[in-house]
Length: 228
Image (spheres, rainbow, N blue to C red):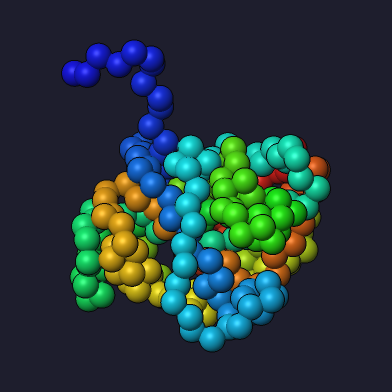
């Protein structure tokens, strides 16, 4: 065993639905503008352009049921997404083999300090300050493929204080799950424990302290959160 000079950081993980086991997380990839209506509301052309990805940190994933409003922002937005958890990986994965690498699926939120992200965009700088802050990826349990299959359609919805804010369908994703996996594997060596957030439908908007959020993907449960 290695003799580390500091205590080993904890392994980020997600619960597995119907099990006492957990899914360990290695990396978190997030695809941008993967629903046409969301691309339009963000001021971009909805035509199928090459996909692009940014990353969050594994320990940004949070299953506590609370979202602490972050510092240095007055415009924090919700983005509900389907989470894809990989059980294996590799390089240059063929499209027809991509789903063989999926362990399961879940519900997650890509919470965004939109004002800070906007500042970074204007200056041509990376987005991490707006995307990869602490507890910026609330998540629910992972549902194994053996239980839910590979969802290709189904309601994606987010409510704030009981009001529907976001609503779409998985079949509206511009880049489907196999395409995301295959494309990512051309530029990164994917591995077991990698997670992909698959994009958000239109209707993103701000939350405030005291709000209650309910994020759901059909067949994958509902993630309930309070903004503190």
